[in-house]
Image (cartoon, rainbow, N blue to C red; front, side):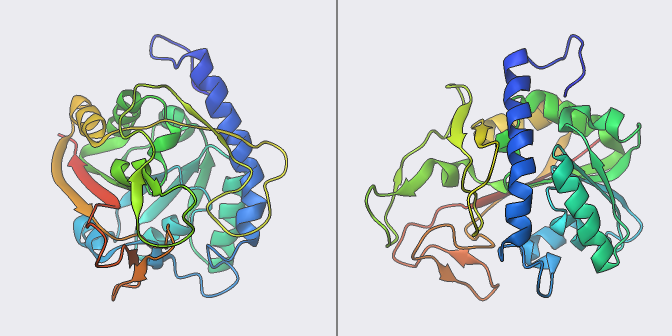
Length: 285
C-alpha cells in the first residue's frame, strides 16, 4: 500500500484501503458481466462525459494524461480516442487486468498501471503529465484529500492541469424517503461533511446490475465536502480556474429521473433543482 515516512497514512486507513482493494477486485467480474458499462455492445466511452467536460478540457491531441482511479478504464479510452497519450492507474489489480483487455479489444493504445493513488509518483516512475483527470466516484475512497492533492501537484508538469469531475457531496447526502420505491422526493439522509470518520458499507451489491459480489464485501468510504476539496487543491499550490455545478448524471441514480436531450438524467421538473456533479479545473504554476 502507501509508502512509509512522515507523510504516511495511519495504519487504520491503510487497512481500510486494502479492504477496498479486495472489494474492487471482487467487483470486477460482476462489472465485466454487467450491462452498465456496455462492454458487449458499442463501447462508446464518450457517453460518460458531459459536453461541458470536453469544453473545459480543450484539445487533447498529443497531451500526456493520467486518469487516477480508472477502474475498467472505459473513460480512459475516450481520452485516447481524442489523441491523448493516456495512462490509467487503479488500486485493483483485477480492474487493471480487465482494463488492459478492454483497451486491446478496442484497439486503443492506453497504458494501465496498478497502484495506490497516494503512491502514484513511484508507480508511474516519476513521469509528469499535462493533465491529471479523476472523478465520478473516486474521492470517496480516499481518506486524506490534502495528501491526494499534493500527489496530483507532483504529477503535473509546470502549467499542467487537474480536472476533477465528481459526484456532488449534496448528491451523496440525499436519499429516497424511507419506504418509498418511486417518485422524486428526496431527503437529507447522509452526512455532507467529513468528521465522523470512515463509513463502513456492505459492498455485496454495487451500482451496476448483476449478481452479488463474492468474497470480499467490506467497503469503506470517506465524505468530503466541496470546501474540503477546494481547500486541498489550493493548499497543494494549484490555481483553480473553473468550478461548476451540474444537475445531470450519466445514468438514473433514483427512480423518477428523466432523460434530457443530452442523453443524461436529472430529477423531474417538479423536484428541486440541485447539483448532481461538480467539476473543478486547476493549474500548476
